[in-house]
Image (spheres, rainbow, N blue to C red):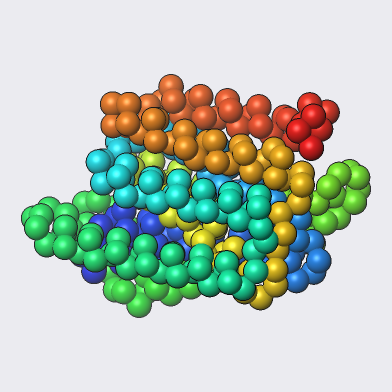
Length: 297
């Protein structure tokens, strides 16, 4: 928020870029560490699980705390882009393999989207008088850019260290419970690596900064799919396991598409809709540890 205020950039862009990338650092480190250590099923499970957590659990909690107003811009640009990126991820995961070619494509798509979004927001901010974030919008933030940047750097380093410990613990839990690594990635690790998103969204919702909350969720899901999978695929190929293809990948694409009608209705996500999203996540989480899921595998 300090960077937004100093640079005359809208809170939505900060949520979509700096905050989203920073809070996605655990997913990046976890996915890379798991892939290089041979636990690729856990790596892909973490990405799918994190995006499901973001859409159902974290967005649901944010809406329950404070109904999220949704602008036409978010519906037509950000939400459509998340759906398109998830569709691309679904197609490659189901019918192909994530290798260097796909990795480069994903990163190029992400770079193009961020460039277009940044330019559009800068042009939009110049046409508005009150788009700049002021000191009244948020309290106790550093006035200087270098101090704000230092805060971000220190926070990201701490997240990375914690994420490296998470992957080793996840492998141990999978062995003790005698469940698949992808299941641990989908549930325990996904929730753990999504805690930064939850913290950011919780604080933003309490401060009625719905654009930060929604921007962080959409930006995090975009960065998880395009940025993390893109970067990791260039280093080492990833193949989607059958367990994820037959069930969890379908859940991800379904709930992502569900975002559109939720946002179109009254141009907001209400407390009732937020409660419904949380309820859906409870069902999804429960199915992971039930025999019902085996029907789809």
